[in-house]
Image 1 (tube, rainbow, N blue to C red):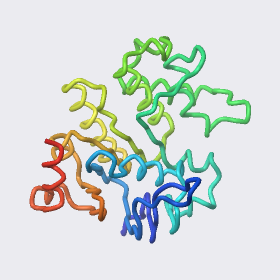
Image 2 (cartoon, rainbow, N blue to C red):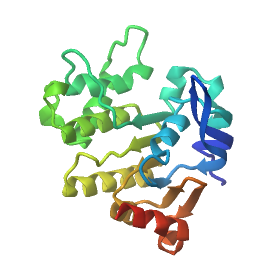
Image 3 (cartoon, rainbow, N blue to C red):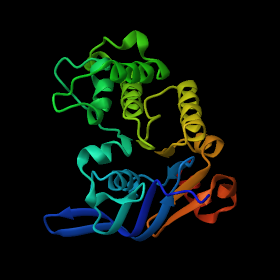
Length: 247
């Protein structure tokens, strides 16, 4: 049976609508990402990796073209419907008065609750599982502003897990983690794609981890985007060029 795309871009233009007009970073994009994909997004600083991720989850509207999530055009979906299809972990920190780790992770279940956001037993069980799997159980009562950068990043990943989406996007999730924790996170994401049939996209400058764990690479340069199997990365001229730029 042919796989259905988790994320599909058709003739898409990505960039920003500014005060002086459109700033287009990428154009004529035709890309599809599927369940079980674990895609590493690589490219030099400023090339548009974060912009790409924000565009395929609806945080930034496409300048042109179409975006489909699980076969449905994103413009035809409500915000709660989008939140049930795709979760995103960005580098920007969120704040909140007296928010604990549990509170932050619990917000991932908001799309599944009623208008008063009342948490039932089934919601709490999902939240507890996300906290446990992310290694945060002993920190769940701590306030967000008390957390180290690494623990805060893990909290945001746990929130995304609690969101129970078929697609998961992460922008530089290893930026504040030690080397061992970076490997643990990539291995965890790989298991999510393999065992839970999730489509996982992660931008990273950790090329060794991307090559070790990801199944595909999306190479972003100033001129083009290229999706290649990870096994072919070292044979690909554009990837080798970008790789040298990181060293």
